[in-house]
Amino acid sequence: MTPLSHMKPLLSAVLLAALTALPLPGLRAQGGILSGDSLLLVEKTMKKLGKNVNFTVMPAPNYNTTQKLGFAILPVLVYNLKRSDTLSPPSSSGIMIYFNFYGSWALAARQAFFWGHNKWRASVEAGYGHLRMKYFGVGRDTVILGNADSNYVWSRIDGWYGSLSCYRRVVSKFYAGLHYNLGSTTLEGTDSSSSELIARQGFPPERLTESILVPSFIWDNRDNIFWSVRGYYATASFQFANSAIFSSSDYSIVSASANGYHRLIRGSNRLTLAWHFYGQAGWGDLPYQRMANYGKGDRATGYTGGKYVNKSELSAQAELRYDFWKFIAAGGYFGTGKVFGSFDTFGQSVWLHFAGARLYVNVMPSRNLRLRLDCAFGRHDWGFYVGMGQAF
Image 1 (cartoon, helix red, strand yellow):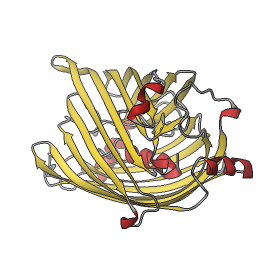
Image 2 (cartoon, helix red, strand yellow):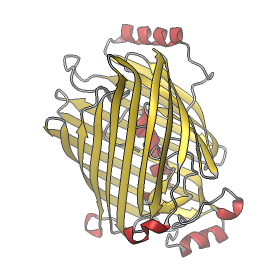
Image 3 (cartoon, rainbow, N blue to C red):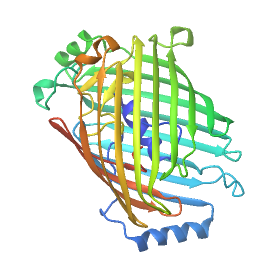
């Protein structure tokens, strides 16, 4: 898991990107509890400055079994490009500053645009970071691993990335577009023995340049991109990296996902059933950060990131959400999945089940943007997560 693959999904989620679905190092509101009166006061203050603008800053400690204790600061600005355009989701701007007590740090920024009465979607983002991470290896997905020190070595990864994406509605709720990512990273051990182990597994400590083209397709008829109670969101993409486009590695990845949202009480949005499916298949010389990393994101929780890594992945989960009142909602969920090297070895990999509970706090009531606290348990593992918005 690289700093870019780890931090980019955090930034994307926090900055309200509806175009990609990617784990969050945790976020927690300072003070632990946000009262409804204080949230309304912030909303009213922002509306005096501009009725079309919402702003929040999330100073947040985070904790996970991969990086332990760290802190993130995330200012986010949400607005509509044209107030008369009531069909387009709101655009957003934001930055992220992250560090932890193991010497990790990252800086990133993202700009997301929605315009043309929901016809066009685009984003620009960039970041740089240096992270110290646990490295368990690749292909250890046929047994249940513990978190004992003997199962991993410490690695350090640094690098930068920049990306551009643009999508256009083709017909109805169907979008097509192109994403381009350019980045440079290194993966190495924190000492000579760990560096030697990582190099033996095919990841020498050389700086890799990734130039990736990603044609993508999206179906999106959700009623709200931040808190969905009806509709579907599905994606399909093909990642292509090759020396012809100045990439250090030649590989291809096909991935697809689907989310569904169903209101269970007629005439009420309080109770919602949400489900999520994800699949990925990779071929060629995949860099470590592009491999399927189970537990790395919201696709699967309750597992330490980096434990189960391979070229392909399949996962599914379902969540029952209940909105208690304007500012508080809760959900319970369960799921399962696995990573595997190829379809020939699919049956040899173990199924990794997980279950958990989530608490949602509405930190931007006018946009229905929520802070998410999440505790999950897997097979001989666990995880605590905090993020922004619905998990899927």
